[in-house]
Image (cartoon, rainbow, N blue to C red; front, side):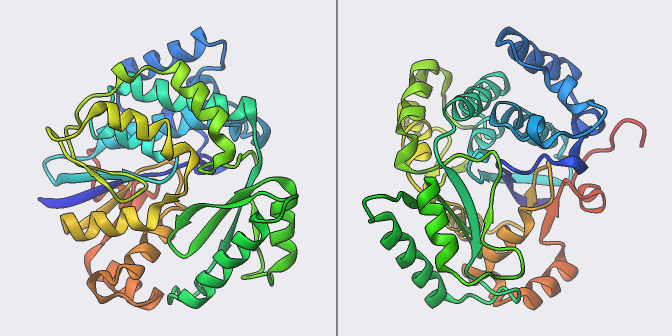
Length: 348
């Protein structure tokens, strides 16, 4: 049996290749029916209808009120699918919206209440749609850390954000990437101030608001009005949040967990790099399991481990050698890696 830290993905991970993910992988039809019932009661398309659509529609599937529910359900279904005879889960963390999934996986929220939180917050974000996000690398394609480059980009962000007619903030510290959020003027000023990188950055993220910034204060307030603290309890598995803080079973304050989740987690930067670093150093797992949907978070996890100097990895080549030798990362959105950690599924 191997020890593992489980990592839950955030927005932007259910795309065309993931259409049908729940139909293929979700292991508990009754629970999926309960999620669908919540959606129906709210006047929303069911997850089943979205997941089994004839074709993927970016305008429909990537909206916050649809994407959040799809991603939560896919992640939680994958968590249920982990083979506990082969894997001992020692901690859970997540990226951005993945924190809501982590709360359910770690037992601080029931699966039904976890879905309620994720779906409610995704819907509120979509209704408000305050600001936007872009992503830009501070590492090169070799994944060798360039801390001077990172400081320069953060300094530029601060200077733009300090202008009276612009809003720009660090949203997520995401391995070798910075996710920035702001208003149109702030995002445009950044795009015009940096050299294009790797032929695709800076990249705007469609249907994303200015998550994890003070611009989301109204959304956080509406979330607290809609969701009571009685939903939250003690975690059953240690949780590592977006500040790198560990919420221990039997020693956590559910009210404080609620306050963080619907407060600072919404309105302050989310440090995914630190969350992965703390999870690695504190729990020393033999592998990191990245739940589906999607396969895009693996690079950020690997880059975060490089920043942490985990197993003396200093760049992309070191990570590839470690991955080939030990299977350090298992992304459940990839069929070959899924098989290494998941129970056999229907039809297999």
